[in-house]
Length: 169
Image (cartoon, rainbow, N blue to C red; front, side):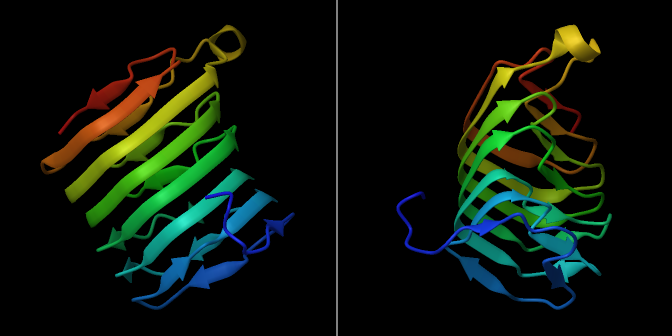
């Protein structure tokens, strides 16, 4: 949360933290006006990110690599203007809990096809300007592509020009 005493990482450009190994844990990160904090260099297992704040910054550039056994807890995204959380094709055993995303445009959460054991619990996604008049593209708040069953519980979605929730699984 914003009360964390860790300093802000600001203006980061390019690759800041490259994930090329399994089982890392990150806590208390605060990132502002930056490129994605993490860039994946391979499929990664067991990554945990807790109590992080991102303001006009993305969490991760997956480069299409799979996320396996990840725990993402108490993440806050402010001033989101792009799709800053996309769980890639074939990812499994992902837990996203207690999150908040506030922004505009295409800033929802996407879980791509082939996923399994996904849980998204206790969060809110608020789109303050869906930008439909600019793009005429309806954006979804929470999209789950074709895959195994997923658990979605207590997620509030508002302000999108498309469906709040779109589940193909």
